[in-house]
Length: 175
Image (tube, rainbow, N blue to C red; front, top):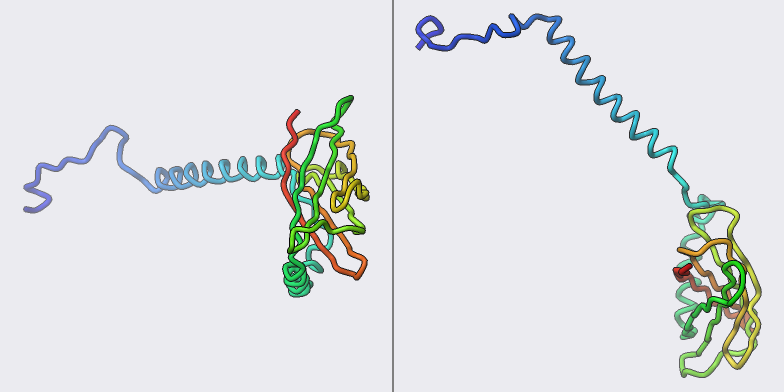
């Protein structure tokens, strides 16, 4: 079968395809791609709240030291139970309580405990406080938080002999 004896007949609806048609098709195609990409870049940059991290490079370089400290903390065998309680009144007052126990289940006393409520998506809403020991092994502090929602609670405790314990836990506070 050859082109002369075939029943194929090109469409004449739009006329013959010329170089201008091909150029217009390419320009239209890439114009749409660039417009969609531009819209996505604008959307990503205008809605980015980000997570604030100071000294990210230095923290990355000190990572092996962090792993060593985590091993030391594991060897202590301390366990914690963290709880939050909404306090009555205006705003979002919250009581943070931590129960420290050693490997044998006995209360760990006389610690210096520092607590932080850290808001990962909004700068300036963080709250810090020193926790006080209210009974053997139980430490508490009240925080006046700006918003309900997702918070990271960071606990840093230091014992009388220089032992350190660090914990981070996500808390969701309901309105």
